[in-house]
Length: 91
Image (cartoon, rainbow, N blue to C red; front, side):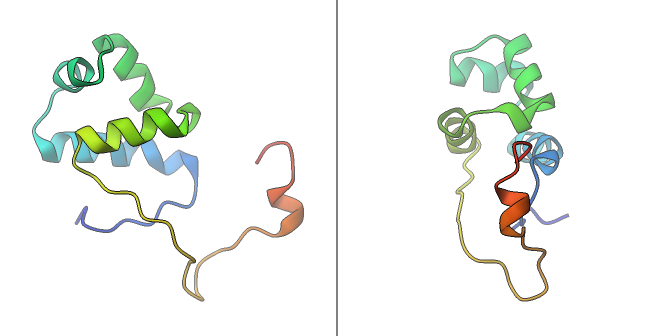
């Protein structure tokens, strides 16, 4: 899988993607944790439960991994949430 560009449309996609970027970078969880100023156990929990990471922490992790986040509108074949779905408490 090329990690150059990868569309993320659901939080469930983040754990595998973060793990893949970390491994591609050649960092262990412990090494990445040290760079973020957290314990290995904390980083491991963040990587497993990436859907619960705040934006600031996610951006810090991506920065250490050398990954840039880009936001844009999806192409015509992408699934777009309807307003009712977007405004639901689960979203």
